[in-house]
Length: 205
Image 1 (cartoon, rainbow, N blue to C red):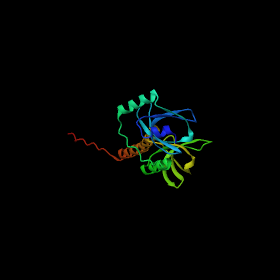
Image 2 (image 1 turned 90 degrees about the vertical axis):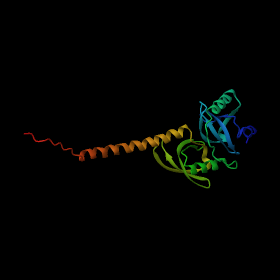
Image 3 (image 1 turned 135 degrees about the vertical axis):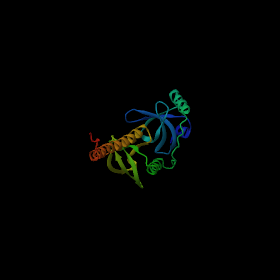
Image 4 (image 1 turned 30 degrees about the vertical axis):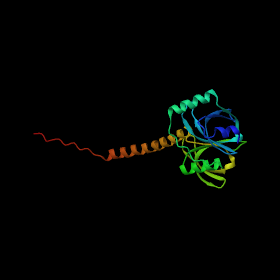
């Protein structure tokens, strides 16, 4: 672990992380770190809380500290003053601890697994047997997509409770609503068929 990571761990100063793949970067607070992984609270570009994320250190191209952009981002975050409860992550094994929290809290997670052929998957971690994790998969439409298992050492990145996971959770709820409405309409139509309205008129003279 670098001295800069140690210095910024647990502070209220965000850092920017640049990935080796894709050239993208994310910003946030370093909440915990060990020699292999860093656990961060990401911030959205608008300065809002954007979930919890574990990143393998060897996959980080570079990190920025104390830039003008990051200082402004921290100011906006403090302005919103969101009440966020940080997960308890062990400094001895950040990734294993994070996965265990995700299983216990039933978090929907997004992971990048593999190194040479990086694969992005979403789903619920349901069990961990030593260094093997089982995961209930969710497709990009929020539908169930079977199960998979893989070694923890294959994980490059894992995130939870970010905007992406919130989007998938909303899709899952909308899918449930969509499946219930046709059933309700069918039952309503059947009820209307069975209802008979009898009109009675008084006999005239």
